[in-house]
Every structure is written in C-alpha cells, then in structure tokens.
Image (cartoon, rainbow, N blue to C red):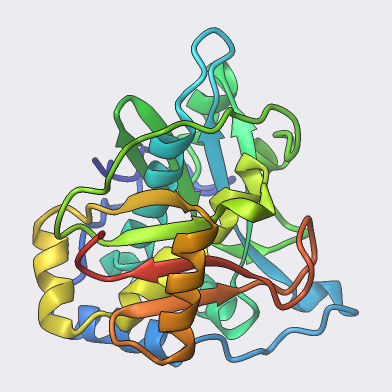
Length: 269
C-alpha cells in the first residue's frame, strides 16, 4: 500500500501538506514522458552542488528482520508510486526537486531504520510501500549534501539480509530481475531495483501504465541465475519490447558498465 504524506512536511514547515496520489490526465502524461526521456546528465561529480539523490529508507526492525525479496518489492513499489505521484508533476509541490533530480543522474541512496528512527523518517515527505509486512519509503530527491537530518543520521551500510526463495513471479506482474552473480548488498540492490522500476515505467505503453496504476502498482523482484540472466541480457541486446536494463555507473560495489537489473513488463516467466 502507499500512504499519504504524514503531517509535518519538510524541516521548518509546520502546516500539513496536502496528500497526493496517482497522477492522471496531463499530469500522468508528464510523469510518463519525463521518465521516457531519461537523465539529462546535468551533473558534475566534481561539483557536489550539482549532485542529487533520492533517499530510500528500509525498515529493518532488530527483532524481526524482513525478508529480502518482499523488502526489495516494497522499494520498487515506493519508487514507482513517488515517480507517478501527482505532486511531482508540473504545479505539484515536489515538481522542482524531482525535476532537478531527473536532470542530474537520478542517484539513489538507501539507508536503514528501526523503531523510533523509522517513525521519525515517516515525517519526511515521501511515499511508503509495504509488501508482506516489509516496508520501505522513497523520499523526495534533493542535493546529496542537504539531506533532511532525520534521514541523514541513518546508517547507509550495516545489516544485510539473507537470500530467500520467493518462487515464480505471479503471472502478468512486471518483474525486476537482479543479477545474482553480482552478490549486491541489500542497500545496493534496493537502489538498483528502484532504478529498474523507473525504466520499467518508461518502457510501458500508456494504456498498460494506467491499468498498472489501477491494479495498485504490483511489481515482483527476483534474482536471476546465470542461465536466466543470459536470456534476459540477450533480450536487451536484441531490443525486445517490454524489456529494459539498468547499466550501473560503478560508484559502489560493481564495475562501471555492469548490467545490474533487467525489468520485464508483463509476463514474469
């Protein structure tokens, strides 16, 4: 489920901000076309003032750790919901921040929280998704050095989660496949899955996108074994419709140019 923005808003804002929801009409047209356009590349890594990121917070309670797959599915759903929220469209209160992030490199930084940290994180503008009791929240992007202190104090590294075996993806549900050979940490995988759902949205036809929104933005995340990954990579190389890949810049964990995730629209088999 997605949840409306809780009262409080950004630091220093005391009045509640109006809740958002899925974009429609011209607002959805903009959300869709902007993701199809991709990054404008307006970022200079040597100039920190141009670097922007989307914070993602994973709910990792100490006593009851979530499953890896449903947590990554919660990340995918949260990022999708934020990117398709009416508040990011022209005229929305998140539009300028979101647009500046898309103009840069669309970086994502995953952090972890538990207990009071998680409850405090829910006060920061963003969208939460919960899958099988596992929750993640995607936040309005901003300059990487100006992260809301309620998020900036959260740890980026640390607890990882064991691989699980969630079984075959449900039929008809979009799937973000993760290259199992890369052995990415849950934080790195979360960032890649978040980007994967963005290229998935860009790949969808408008009618399919509208149906997906009505269905509640279901998305499956699965790890691909070497044989499956070769098949998916071949589909990407052939330009197969409904298939899109994320090529990592190589800032952390993996080599530059690595395909980290491949999103498949529609069937999961």
